[in-house]
Image (cartoon, rainbow, N blue to C red; front, side, top):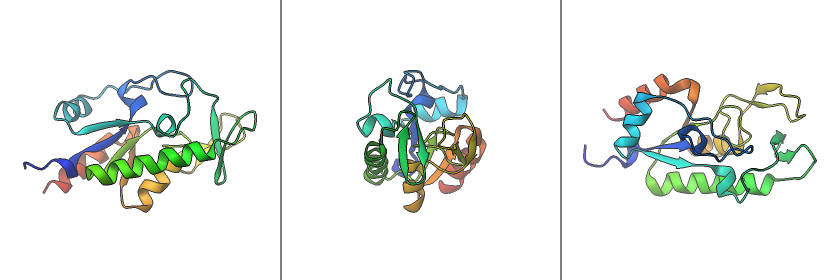
Length: 158
């Protein structure tokens, strides 16, 4: 198929080894399948928090309802919301219908996020970027769901 735009995947930059996390680290994953996808030009690295204007490193933040705040109480909701909108716009411009995002993140968590009390306790929930992408029909997977993502991509190619 000559047009692979529909088969590109937006991927959390930290999962690709880029040091963009709040602590200045990455959470790179080792996956031959993901590496092959990247070699085909079908991976687009994106960090919503950096895109939204937050520095690296930065204070850790957690969702508290619709807000995102740091442990010191600084409201960073606007930066997280801006990053989510930029992620959506990127997907729409590139024809991307699938995303692989970092589980647990207040931006990218797809099944769980931290409870908002900075206790290291995760709860069911989704990050701001994941929520916005899903509301616009983009399928979001976590790094624990690579086989499901691979199946979804293969199915969409038929």
